[in-house]
Length: 301
Image (cartoon, rainbow, N blue to C red; front, side):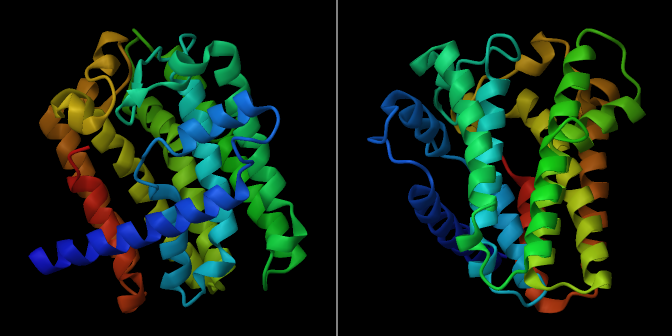
């Protein structure tokens, strides 16, 4: 087991470095006008983070025999989208958080107006990158149109943004399990599923492989948020890098609130098993995905 953990750490470190180097190339520099805006955008992108979504995209590509260079720009785009969502999520009008990844949130450093515009800038920059013909590599125009469609859908009103709205509307209200799962599968799961599906598409997956990876993405995406709910109660704030207990204080709909801590852990374990089962026919090439699924469920931050 120690060897497995070491291998995963090495894989995550290598992929993180690869993604961050590419992000540095693709994002406007902090000296490009307007410097305050680009500095704010880069502040949140490079403030740390696990890079789970882009790494999952690379791993899905590898699982079907694809080359990660063909998916790296899309992986950077999804991290820009994720970073924008965190900036907006932390704003006083939403979660009003002071810390993100152990650092002051964007609006605490740059002010609310610039933080809003930094999020807007990152979302737009993601699609500037995705629509650039120079980054398509061996993919066809039709394939990249589908990539743009998948990421836009995962981020929009039928995905992450829609989940965020239902999450806010559910605060301080009794919520049933179907509503809770809607929130989590959209607010968090939709973008993770999009990462997996884009990796499969650009990796050259067969129809059967793509369906299997989509099942994995659905289970892993929901598991990620279930564990986040648990960590909001039990984690150490210094380890987690953000405010602890904020979900409870705002009366948010969470798995521990509905099922209790033990029930939430059982749900995470069920989703972990489902994720692993979906990869049963993909062989050793899918080992990074299996290891990441275990990391998602067993992480402490």
